[in-house]
Image (cartoon, rainbow over all chains, first blue to last red; front, side):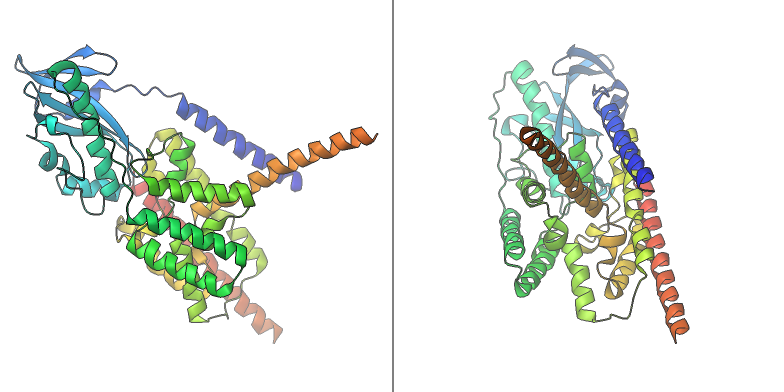
Length: 390
Length: 35
């Protein structure tokens, strides 16, 4: 039995590595079939390869340039194409490729963000969320990425073809949510070090109210999958991502403990608070049942991971209910999950964490991998010291 | 006595299994709906 388990783990590990290699070796060229989405021109001619720029025309009349920009949004790179006329005004912008959480991107389209914020604007002013572009409420991170991508495209055209000098400004967005995250990390560290029950409850309350409801900050499974695929936001765009992911991974690396699930995750804290406040303790589960059920979230995480990596559809790995409760956004059938999880968590300690959460699966796996790697080194050291003694 | 206890345990296990299966199926459906 032990042997089967070991072989299965090796097989799963290898399959993950193969899938990642397949994903990394995919070409990332801009596909010309994507151009069909444009209304403002009917013919195009490539005039530069690196960066790719096209001269575009309507019925033979050249009207401007098409260039591209890419920036990381909430969970994926967003590729935007911008058509800019010879006077330096934006004629059209399109999202050509993205893998954002569907509910966020829907908000962008519903608000007509691309048309309302960019079309007709001169590129010489530059584009920025703190200056002339209004972000879509509830989809700020995606809005910022799109704005940055349009800026990149307009820089390409301005400098080479229109002789317009644009100021290259990298806005560093350090906001209240980043301060809140730093405080969260300090609280988690103190809770871990001091093992004080009252402090732990304070940390939990802070996590639910401030991190969850106020700032909607939590690690999504899609972040982890994107990171494995080598994609991450730039530091200037999303400091919060670095505090949360960096802090969590550093904690695991240094202490071997998954502090995120225990102290930081607002959804976990909310469930634990529910169980402690309800005081229901008559729900007893046979250890065997519990142990078997705990295997299931890993299986789901593996299947969706494989699907997302092989089909490049990051939507497959965004199925957690976190943004249902904290951001009140979700898709259709997903809404069933929220009442079910909340009711079950009154009876079963951290129901979702234990029996469904993919983030917990990956973080706990990281803890195991760390232990395994350390174990190898320890064994090596021991055999070496034995050799010395011999 | 022990029989009642055992059957109650089984009921609780069944409820949990049901809830977990529903949660995971809804998660899978959400995942597929995002395609």
